[in-house]
Amino acid sequence: MACRIADPSVFLFTGPHQRIRSQKIATHSAPCMTGNWHLTWDRLLVKGENHKKWVIPMRRTRTVQAVAAPVAPSSADSAEYRKQLAESYGFRKIGEPLPDNITLKGVMDTLPKKVFEIDDMKAWKSVLVSVTSYAFGLFMISKAPWYLLPFAWAWTGTAVTGFFVIGHDCAHKSFSRNKVVEDIVGTLAFLPLIYPYEPWRFKHDKHHAKTNMLEEDTAWHPVWKAEFDSSPNLRKAIIFGYGPFRPWMSIGHWLIWHFNLKKFRSNETQRVKISLACVFGFMAVGWPLIIYKAGIMGWIKFWLMPWLGYHFWMSTFTMVHHTAPHIPFKSSDEWNAAQAQLNGTVHCDYPSWIEILCHDINVHIPHHVSSRIPHYNLRMAHKSLQENWGKYLNEAKWNWRLMKTIMTLCHVYDKEENYVAFDQLAPEESQPVAFLKRVMPDYA
Image 1 (cartoon, rainbow, N blue to C red):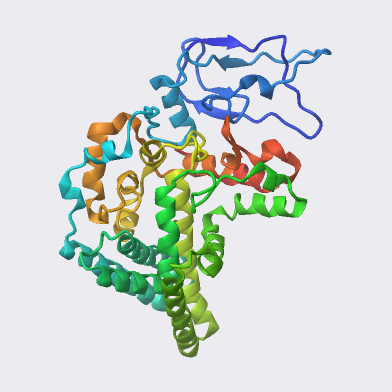
Image 2: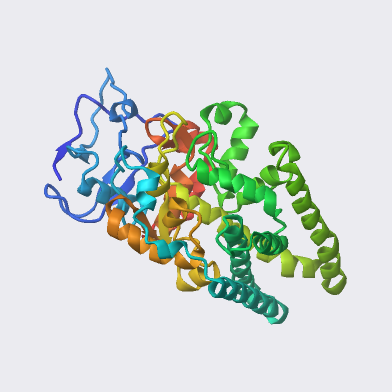
């Protein structure tokens, strides 16, 4: 990579309450220097970024230490450029941009027909895995001494996430050929999570139809700048929510999206009401029984803590699947289905026990190419996508740098840069983000 000394006619300015942040981009030697090298802005390497707007020309100059900075490659989409981004963000691989003329149907047609086949034996085997692992988790909670309870809660929260994946397949009509069976199993699978099945299904279908579309996607969006600037109290809440509380922010999504009848069309409300009645019935019967048998502390131990564990996975899985500095959210007039689903979704490998208990939900790219693929066929479908479209795929193995990138950089929407971090816009109010930068490991 070519390198140069920063332009001496332009100087970096730091006021009394500002400081220059640096992000480690590479750990290998470049031809013009040895050892590690750094960039002086968190987002200098983001594709399409206008570097000039981050510097201020000064009439009164002062001597500063020369900084070696990499020259942007001749092609922002070069393999070397993407390799640097991948290392910087904690990705294994960042795919090259998908051409505009590729359609989602064209991608789907390359998948083998076998990946769409429903296998009842495999589907019910997954139910058995989730039920037994969840029961084992409850048994561990009942027997574990206090110092082992966090491990029992982590297991049980992960196991009950498997219930969500089973209900998720039912909602996508990929669990059974019998749609009544799917509705029953989906409703029952969601009950321990206090998730109303039909409201979630309606909103989730829209997420698949409008993935990473700015207004319409019903999963998570970047924060709007106008919303961020609207009031100091809201800004603080947003910074905490998208900062330290982000691994549990799906709780807010659960409350806002699934219990308000006004958010559904008139032809949906009847099914929504049935689902809500099931959830409230479960709460009215199940919670008092737990409290009667084990007390309030038993309710916390056996239900609340595993439920929080489930929401940790719900939040972090969703973050990793669709959030990265290089993955754009686009307005409806610019949005492209194939780019959003194939190029804007992330495959992430987790430890094997998580993959087993969560039924491969993180093999996520083929699921967005076609939601009709059952979870037990996702790996076969992903292998096919790697063979036919591999150069366009974003892939990672879970690591701390990946999480740190998402939680400290991917905040406020910006059309050119995709995201602007909170501490670039409101540094004095972004102590939660500064805290995350200090305490989160940077291991990739």
